[in-house]
Length: 484
Ligand SMILES: Cc1cc2nc3c(=O)[nH]c(=O)nc-3n(C[C@H](O)[C@H](O)[C@H](O)COP(=O)(O)OP(=O)(O)OC[C@H]3O[C@@H](n4cnc5c(N)ncnc54)[C@H](O)[C@@H]3O)c2cc1C
Image (cartoon, rainbow, N blue to C red; front, side, top):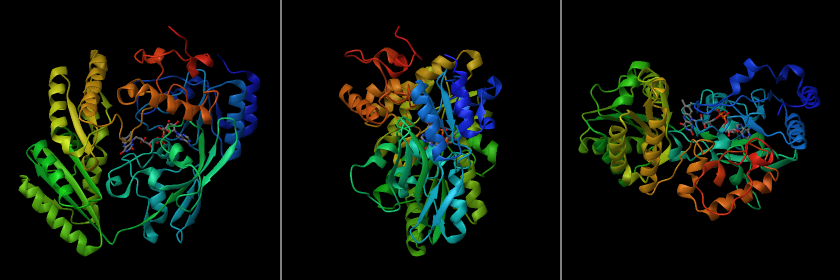
């Protein structure tokens, strides 16, 4: 349903006419996030510049029953920021200021549109950094990171976004503003911060975030080890963890990914390797040296045919550049790719990787593997050609891979979220009762179901697979979807 003229004028009055987008061609910029298979052109995009602006915008949306979705940089991979047709996108791009740096408390207060890497850049010279480091960190925003509870290579040692957020300013869907936490750890009362971090934009809009800063370690050592097979590299990962060594990162790439990354970024990975491990150690010099020697020994015992350490900051940056460009590098191998995101217990890695290989052969599609091996977070990249009618087969393969993760006792998302992509997969992991609890929590924040509807929580009729009594879905109530 088109938005009323009065509604559009109201938003223009709040944020300024130049910050309300209504032209179809401009709206198309917002039609999807990184999950490009799902698209919907929003009715309007609004770019607020303050908490008060956001408050006025969501109040107007609630009053008029217009669904809205918050958007950071749109790099999400699960369709979390995909708009609803007829709905509003609240882009936080203009709210990109660093508001306070408090090094005595090791805290920084930022607006949600600040890019992840800019947090570290602002304090690196003072000997601090912001630990959660998604590979998209040059562009993805802190607001998006909070919503997705994003991870990254170094979360193995330092923890995920949820461990680095101590306070939030949050606008509820009815326009009320709440302050949660602050600079201190562990505030009194129920853990509402914990509920909001990772809620994928379904509970309200984050407008200010207090982040924990970490001291830059005394030294960092980055090791690269080349193996003939994924099995051998997987055994080395298990060996490193079993030895009690705690690297800050253990990343693994398979042959296909290595070849693509080499062509894209020339990081100098070992030629002919079937798998490569990037292992990073940090801390005090003596400990790092001991641990590096132990890691080298374990990799050699597991059959590594090449082991080397980065010799300079530039060399280290290059090794990481290869890893961080791996997704994009797949564009050199196939016209389309789908990034799956599943978790398996670390000990089951080799077996699940073998199963992925079998599934890839059965479906006749290539799969590249690049992942956070230290915490068992797989990112199989299913390569396909939508122009050749392979989309459906790719989807089936991605789902079969997810089943393999769940069968191994894993989980359906590690860090990319459920969003629109996996809402219908939720019953594979959660019982009907679990889902009802999630729904009740959501309704406590958003009784009218107007905030990012259609994401995360499945409904029987929309997914067609959950038994039990029918409940009216939020999308139906606001007239965006109808029962078939
Ligand atoms: C090449 C590539 C590599 C990636 N690597 C990683 C990785 O290593 N680790 C990882 O975890 N992810 C990774 N991602 C996924 C993605 O970058 C993260 O999920 C990131 O946190 C999304 O941030 P964004 O600003 O782009 O958010 P968006 O995509 O714009 O939004 C993501 C979700 O956050 C919600 N949201 C955004 N801002 C707010 C706000 N202010 N208040 C409330 N909700 C909000 C949206 O509604 C949506 O549900 C990668 C993506 C790409 C394309």
